[in-house]
Image 1 (spheres, rainbow over the protein chains, first blue to last red):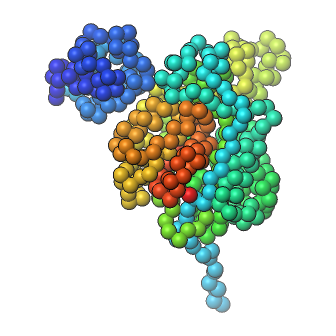
Image 2 (cartoon, rainbow over the protein chains, first blue to last red):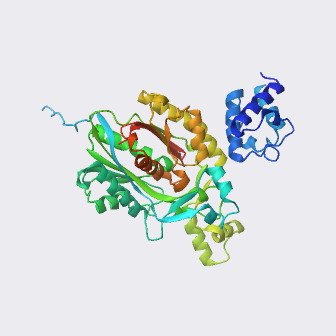
Image 3 (cartoon, rainbow over the protein chains, first blue to last red):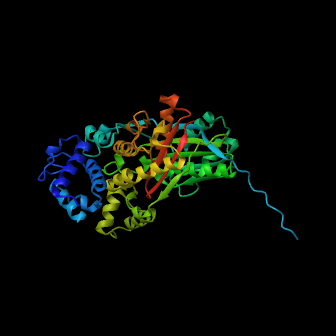
Length: 81
Length: 353
């Protein structure tokens, strides 16, 4: 099981690969849509890659609740637990 | 009394695609045209979908007309007379008659009568379903040459003002002739369905709903608010999709199916000359190519930029264009994969004609 810091770092890599954003820009309190300007298609790509990387399942209906990077980190952490 | 031994149809060991034809209708719909109907922009549509234009057919051009145009070219390229066809298969979800089939009329127009003729309803996987069946028919000896056509007039089943799918779609037809071959030309088909996602892409309501709404409307005052909304806004059934669910399924599950088709054919991504996925969305195409780790020299079909998503027609249309623009691809291996409403999917590795 990964720590929140490790999940954040892994997520930042995925976001970087999909959008080109610097990994440092991916912080816990940042909103995917408002701050990071990530559209719905990129979000699904990030979700799919996060599932693979962290070995969790993120249902479609859960994706809309993941508003901030922190939301995603908490969801992945609890799904791994 | 002894029972006589039956004769069975002689088998063919191998099959191949012999020729490809295309029909692209004349009306060009730009992103600026689309933005008259939905609140969007050329930039937004290009970025999200990779689509710049789509071709649509005028009112007097039918699914069968487009199928005929593509079929005539495919027959000519294959060097086959229509009278030699042992079966005519049309993949379509937009032929506006539940019966009779588009294929029977097409066979008659081409001069293929009395070849067996039937339609397939497998949406965006329809062309790959058709190839799976044609390959099996020829190898089993049930037919010598088979015409497979993907033909769609999606503009008849869209609501230009909705945002989930209509702006992606175009009209057109693509066709191929399949026949016996000295060497293997069509790898094993990896095909299937997942009806648990029946609601992910499809029509807003059924023809029976339409009949009820129409008759209730005529009687006046009998409509619930919900029914009235449907009759007023769009009583004609049109397409909708749950874009996120479909995108995720397409990228994630379909990359696995594509890999299975490579494995079944006994080749790897490095052996491919071209990748010809269903032209659903440029982002899906890019993401699948990444997941498959396609080497840079594999040419990826990106017909969607100009043609939009033409459902069953998209793979043969994209193949036709790829061969026009890159004649050196002839004889090379291509991975093709279709996926769509059902949900259904089909993939094969083929030798390009």
